[in-house]
Length: 109
Image (cartoon, rainbow, N blue to C red; front, top):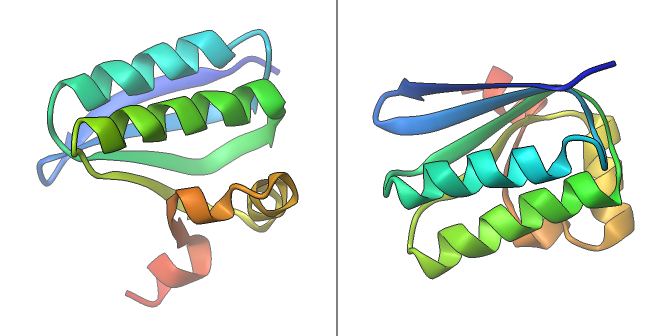
């Protein structure tokens, strides 16, 4: 499965939708796109609803972008975090690095 990135602006936030597998083959592209959005200066939200799987390189891309956002004092949030992705974040011990919005949280808003 290939990965696809789509960037849109919703209510003043840059929303980056990531679809497919986030692995070694696309991790650098994901990091570059996310860091470009952070550099634009507005809050960045990453739509994780269609991430099929994520490996350590993909996770590293999200962490790098999150640190870039922190350094730039820009908001950075993972949206629609599925249960499998939450488990990966927890297993890696990095869940606390991110502002997370789980699917169930969004459904109740």
